[in-house]
Length: 458
Ligand SMILES: [Zn+2]
Image (cartoon, rainbow, N blue to C red; front, top):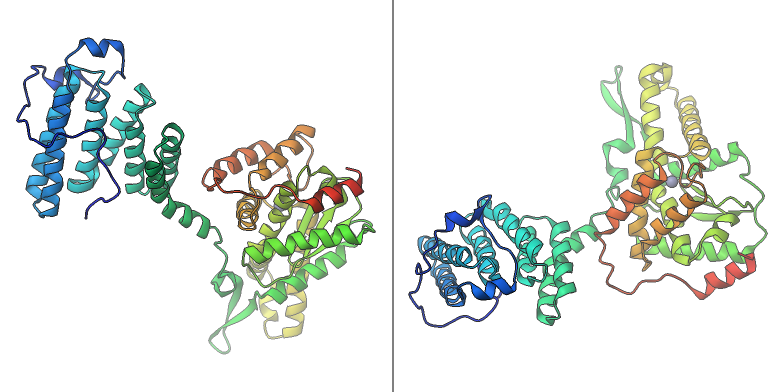
């Protein structure tokens, strides 16, 4: 398979000069940890032998290797690339300041991995990384690093070096090449976030039991959107009002529009989430399937619409990940093995009543104590995608966390509940955000947000 997007750097002579070992320095003498030493460009390099002709000859061997690939001659490909490697190693030994020789050798290592033996990539990556450390402007080293990581399926590092290339080079064609290179990784990342899209069809959305009378496995509970919403409604009813509802229909309508926009751009469970605004100064929000509670204090605290969206998206994240249902199912399973619930399988209404009770317990607990560390992380992760999909810059998630943390690192805001610690959450989210293509224009604010904030006196 040819490698169409790659180009050879620098000039290439058309004639094979047949000039090779004339420099008289054995490569082994100048090896550093198995690699020839490269010290970066410097004035000293000017006083050492000029190796540009050798580099040209090496490229001719590389070109010959490419011809051999087209001809399907694997032996010749291997031989030609080995020849190029030898020449470049000698050239670099003679002049350890030659960027062309060093980068050329790194590129040959890459092609050897690509055409001859894929196990060579770590070797190529290590050498190219050393080049870049000694010579941060060796654009082609970064370019082939991006390619090598992409070949290894390492999207994060491929992206890192592609961004590097874009930062140090003004070559538009090279920018396009790098964008092409990382696109599949970006698409896989952006498409692959929602792991619970098929939740209702999974075994974990069901509780089954073996009925010894009929010898059948019977489904005792099947989670459905209606089941989730009824749990949430009863949980909320049991808990009583979370606070006085805010008498501000415009604020409620505005938040509802935001939630609807987020849901419309990230297909999830068929649950319409209704915003309830609570008049409370605490910057907080909570969610159960079908209901998102938002304190007026949160809207005042948010400095941009993107921050507000980050919180709403986080709450939606809990609904998308079916956290309440997943907890309820596991609680039912625990109690079924431990108690007499099993014997109730035949008494359907009584069983149903008890199952609902368990679900309500779970929901009440969630609203009072918050979710587990693992579920909070998952909601954070989902939130970045839900916000991004609706066109918002997801990095505002961390800016909000940071500001909450600055007020008081120990205050257990439910939103940033002590589990996991806010600092850890900031760090994890920041790392995750590195995989987003944030080179597009994204929304941060809106006229509506500014007006709402002014009315609230924030
Ligand atoms: Zn949460």
